[in-house]
Length: 130
Picture 1 (cartoon, helix red, strand yellow):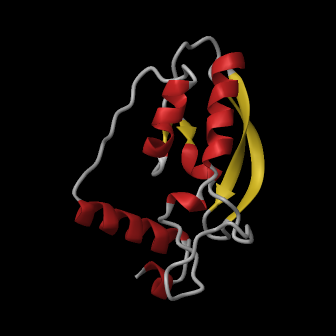
Picture 2 (cartoon, rainbow, N blue to C red):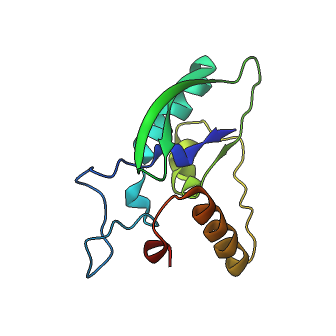
Picture 3 (cartoon, rainbow, N blue to C red):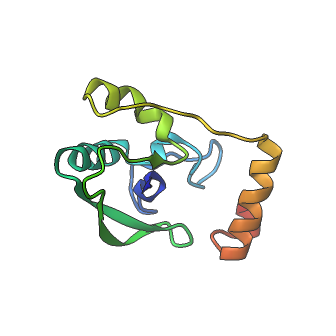
């Protein structure tokens, strides 16, 4: 599984969108994510069976490392992430897409799960999360 959420931009990227009326970064905006780099990684993976991907630390809002992701001889792989739907069209245009699926639960359940995870892992401050 290719983790597309590791393609978030770093906290000091000047192109990051802001929450209106605030200096806070809008991490829920697709503009906080590097779609171009994600598509390039998918294209490389389809072409060669491997690609270099970032390792992203949400607590520090930064890329802390990189790793090689490889699919071996498999003709298919899963790419998942909160903004995956935003690159479906581009991947289809490039001939990289076998299928696109959306799995989602109730928004209140998703919020609770994310809040518990973020608090447990110390990803952001409590006021920021709420």
